[in-house]
Image (cartoon, rainbow, N blue to C red; front, side, top):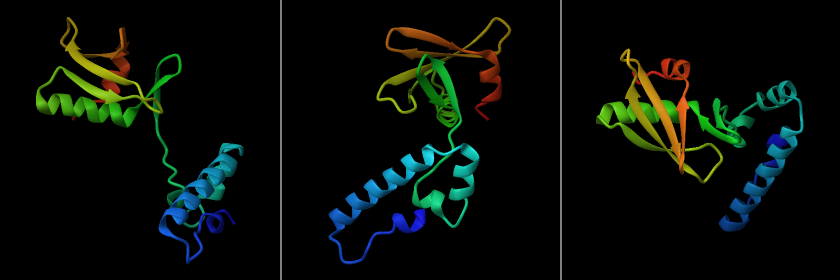
Length: 136
């Protein structure tokens, strides 16, 4: 039923069809958000509903209060810094317009360290996180 909901009827102008699809997709996703996670998974695993609704699983790190960072973004930024030989790279926080900078260094034992700089705040990344998100 949900997959049929996000189908766009033929004959609509492109602008109207795109706006309608966005609104119907948003409504379907809001409905799914109300369900228990296992129900949502069962429903969206049918057909290609996850693709139709652009549902993507994202592993997040909470860095400070409500500020979150995608593990994938952290890994990609770390890789970019190492590849380009930089000690500081910009990255985007999850579901936020705020930007952060990742500063890389090493501790006294030579192990990699990372610090997120968000505005005037400096938030060290836990050593276990740095170990689990290697740049190679």
